[in-house]
Image 1 (spheres, helix red, strand yellow):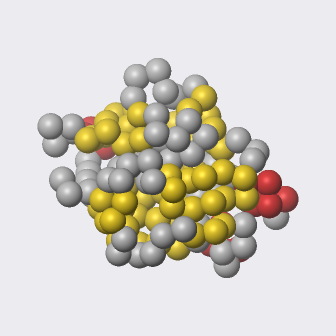
Image 2 (cartoon, rainbow, N blue to C red; image 1 turned 180 degrees about the vertical axis):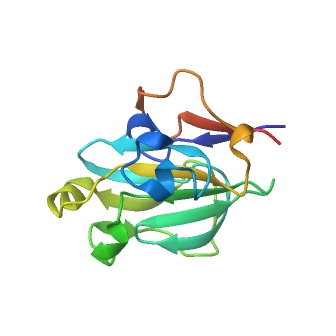
Length: 153
């Protein structure tokens, strides 16, 4: 049985190796893809149903009931902003459905502060060969809730 990971935000899907951070681009954190977001204030949504095991203004991790965990990291080095430009809508430990809003993100403020808005979506604790980008997604425009990745069991 496969798990579908949905796009958490609007933008253009890019290959993980194109993320401007070697820890993500080399797959050190895990396999996945990234979204280069539209230059708007965006709702960032849960890419899978599950429990929010970690919530920071710039990133969150959701663990699904099937054991799949997904990290959404909003921008590169945005931890240095101490939460500025992010409004967290949920608490750590909350249960969410896929598509539920998690963070409101002021992308123009992040760009104005000099940070890359490219946002890795990483499948945690899974081998790269078990994670595939959804057909036709890479390089294409994507909307929240649209399939981004497939994780094989």
